Length: 217
Image (cartoon, rainbow, N blue to C red; front, side):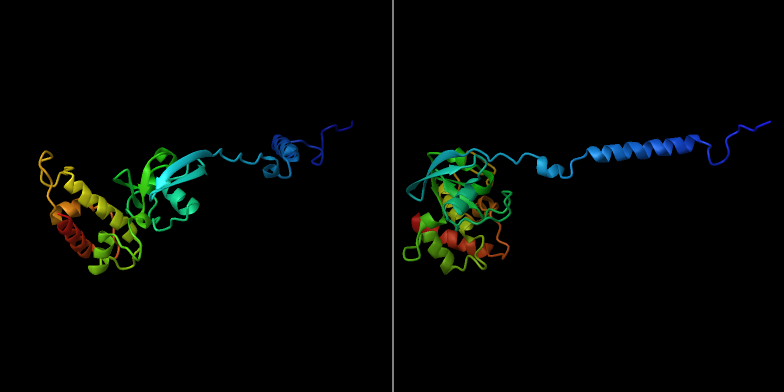
């Protein structure tokens, strides 16, 4: 009588069948993947630009900008006005402070397109080496800077701070928002607190601002 039971070489086990099926599936999947999927991906479409016209330091400047361009990058990268510095780029250091319509702002936190038709003053528009703005001259006299990186923002902010106080714009220093602010060290410190000087020239900056305020008074 012949024994028809499969020998060890011809036996198919459940584990072996599953392993063979998984390997075949993996091979089939790999064969359908493009050699270079990245090469077949469409390239990103360039962003559309928009016309922006800003009066900067007394001169109207017209630009075609990506709508996402910050005022800081428009000044530095498109107009080569590099006096305005890029510090933290998060609105925390004040190095990029400029004056817009008489109000100081962090130019890294605002889009250039938002200021279409407005007037912007940068450090280049305050004075020149031959004809310094009184605040610039006071900073030089009182050593209101060391490395100088934060100085353009400090000076723009200082000019606006004195103007704010003289215009009677209140702050919470006195505890009474209806009281007319006075030019005091405490008032200046509070209003200038958004401008960081990593060299620590704060006392000299205050001296410079007090001198300008007293001369202008």
